[in-house]
Length: 112
Image (cartoon, rainbow, N blue to C red):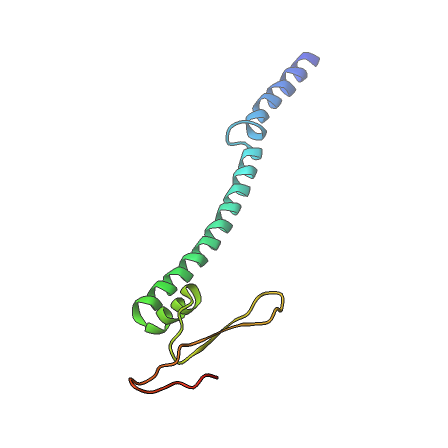
C-alpha cells in the first residue's frame, strides 16, 4: 500500500511539472503577460508620437503659419521688419540681431 501511495504522488508530480515549469506553463505565461504589457506601453507611446507627427504634417501641408514657424525656429529666418531676440538658457543677456533697414533708392539712412 505504501508503494502505491508513493507511485501516485510521483505520478501527480510528473503531471504537474508541465503545468508549472514546462512550455506554456504558469511561469512562461506570466513572463509573456509581462512582455505583452511592456509592448502595449511602447505601442501607446509610439502611437502618441505618430499622431503628433501626423498633425504636424497636416499642418505643414495646409497652412503657411507652420512653415513660417519652422523657418524661424529651425533655420533662424527673420523678416526684414523684425528684431530677433535669442535667449540663452541660464539667464545670460539676450543677443539682438537687428533686421537690415530697407531704404528707397537715392535716400540716405541715418545711423542710430
